[in-house]
Image 1 (cartoon, rainbow, N blue to C red):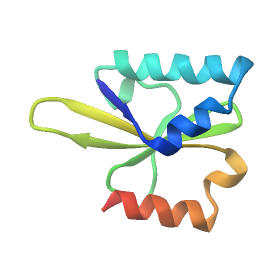
Image 2 (tube, rainbow, N blue to C red):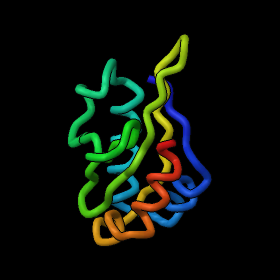
Image 3 (tube, helix red, strand yellow):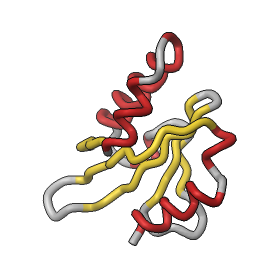
Image 4 (cartoon, rainbow, N blue to C red):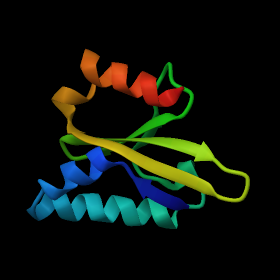
Length: 100
């Protein structure tokens, strides 16, 4: 699959180090090599959204939108946040905005 990253996602990744950074890199590689969303470990579609999914990476959650283009499938990683922040009202509002 094709992969792209939002500015927020890149900023969050830059703050990581050690095992968590390695885990994020492994997940991104897994996504790139996946033939479909079913091939991605710990990937779930969020209820109430059309194109928003999350991947569990330890205590973090990577949120992404999945858009089907005419030629290629593209996954756009939007956010990487700790689990405690992942489902608060502010995060949900932003996910709704990008899902439109």
